[in-house]
Image 1 (cartoon, rainbow, N blue to C red):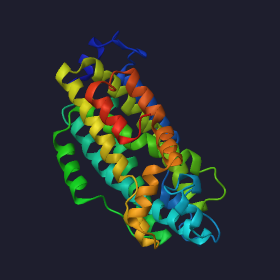
Image 2: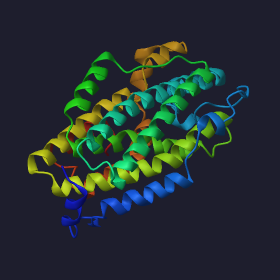
Image 3: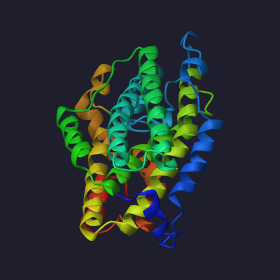
Image 4: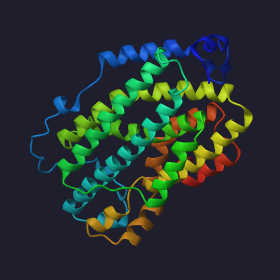
Length: 312
């Protein structure tokens, strides 16, 4: 483990992005930001307001079938229904991911000084993620769509991941789950075509998630400089495999049958869609550029990222 005292011994280390920042200073700034810009979704959002007629639950351009032959055959009502179900699917995925993240963060701080700003911020982030998970669950209920759990295989693979993941692997997977959804939500909260409640949910998540991304990026940079070679290699492979699983789980295929579409036809058209490929790669680009810069995108790991469809 790296203690607060040891942290000073790592001063002067650098990677391709420059000097590593002091862990305690980063955490202190994030704690100050949390004090200024944290939200209670139960109080901030009007959960009693009725669902708005004619408004989307997710921007149409971000719906998986957008601009496919099947999309062009669908009625506007069916398109909006698919968007509602996909919003519920993404929220379900988000809750699953955040429960994993909370456990990874607890493991990360278990051996560290409980009085450090680094640990205090991790606990602050865990509190954020608790609120986010409850917020997403309420949004699913408000929209009237079902929850969409991941497959039993992925559920159990995550059980293994959160038990055995090394620290750099944990933070690489954290960024995978956070940054693509963050990109989509930044397009969602200013979009006046979208339900007011959904815009409010995404706005809160974007503001608070920006701190989580900063924390994970700074820690991953540190780990990729200080971790032993075997751990860096494992991180490259595990993050690539996580990208492959994440891309498959991003939208639960059950959404198609739930809105009256043929599942096989829908999945085939999503897979062939140039627009969908561009959306997913655009959402991942900021992350993949960062991972490339700090040495994660190499060898087998890079090939797995390419096979996921998230890397051009």
